[in-house]
Amino acid sequence: MSTFLGMPGGRTAGTRGPAADPGVGHLTGDRSFPAAAHDALANTQLRRNLAHATSTIRAKRASVVAEVPDWEALRDAGSAIKADTMARLPELLEQLEANVIARGGTVHWARDAAEANRIVTDLVRATGADEVVKVKSMATQEIGLNEALEAAGITAHETDLAELIVQLGHDKPSHILVPAIHRGRAEIREIFAREMPGVDPLLTDEPAVLAAAARTHLREVFLRAKVAVSGANFGVAETGTLTVVESEGNGRMCLTLPDTLITVMGIEKVVPTWRDLEVFLQLLPRSSTGERMNPYTSTWTGVVPGDGPQDFHLVLLDNGRTRALADELGRTALHCIRCSACLNVCPVYERTGGHAYGSVYPGPIGAILSPLLTGLTGGDDPNDSLPYASSLCGACYDVCPVKINIPDMLVQLRAEHTEAHADTHRLPSPEAAAMKAAAWVMADEGRFAKAGRAAAVARHGIRRGKPRIPLPPPLNGWTASRDAPAPAAESFRDWWTRTRGGSS
Image (tube, rainbow, N blue to C red; front, side):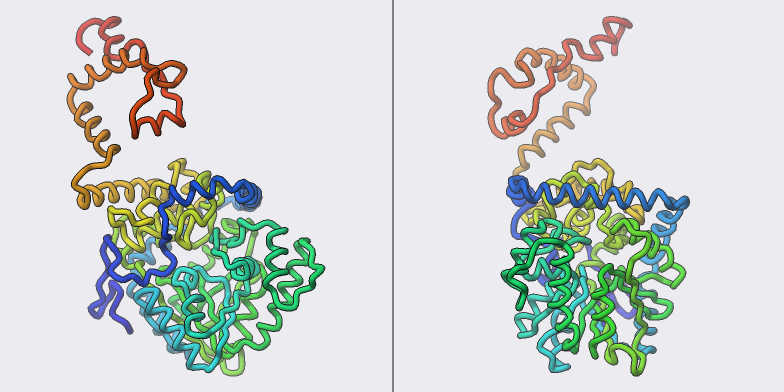
């Protein structure tokens, strides 16, 4: 067993700060969120696609959740199980490892994306195969496995329909659950016609026709593939069982047909017992796809002679997770079961889409998870801007099936970024200087009273929500897009003194 985790045998947990190793995979982009969002907001087709898709998923989720009388109790149970799991993560992972090995599997431990990619690539090479089929997996997207395999001369075939669309379009996923949510039917038809071998040139953009074309293309790949790579929604420590839930049946094909199966699982995906799994198999489908249950729930435990893959490998991925685990508040981000409910209710995500976040994890959960996994620098790292990609409306907290308090964590990360920025920059930003000045004024009763009277005088400088004299930069950026409310003619303190007498 490796020695990278905060566990027995000399394993030490990470701490919050700059990532020590560059092998973080696809957890950060090359631009800040404000810069990327600016371009996304100009794409009207993208905004229409997102608005339609997210509103549809929201409505479906609300309908099936309303059917469950003990929904809040289920959320409480899910949150409690996750909290217990994080508190006992070292022993549960060792229990999972022992049970996988006892049932004929092999367990590998990967410190980061680079090590995980190296392990998987070596395993595929050892089989002599030059291609693999893949079940949709956020973990393999996170580490950039497809690119690593390609560099080694190995072709990775995505078999999930949405992931296939993204792959053939030379694109990136923009949603945790629906990676091609930013694509319309006409765009998908054009991608298939251009990139899919042997496709009918008369292909239309009817959903059933597009699905049939993908099925024909993938069936040949399934039948010849010798190696499959999967993620895992859950790993049951009690028995060493891995679980994948999906809607199309492609996962079942990948998990049963090939000779070799390699599963990459984030260490936070472990659950203690089968009884705990019952809770999440109720929470996940309703929160993600708006379904009462997943059409396909596949579980496998080690190797069974003559049935399914005869060589099974489990790669347990850290990649910054012990960094988050070491943080008292941040560890709750590891409770996430990747349902994407927070994305579907987020007004920021609905307008910018997932690509603006840079990371493979977009939306509210990505705005906390990516900085936690890579570390805040206090500088110009793109992930440092993600905690500000939120209106803090709280809708994400209301729908989270395991009750992750995302707004509180965003505020915490903003505070940590501000402190880190102060440590790395001698000169404060204009905003920081303004806040420091405001704090100085509000700390003294006399100064605060004088500021209130000064504001009453300043009201004469505002006409119809705009300053009579344009403000200098950077203040003009604020007034250019907002109306400035005129201060009251009389402050509360002055009103109190006039009407009640004496000092206020």
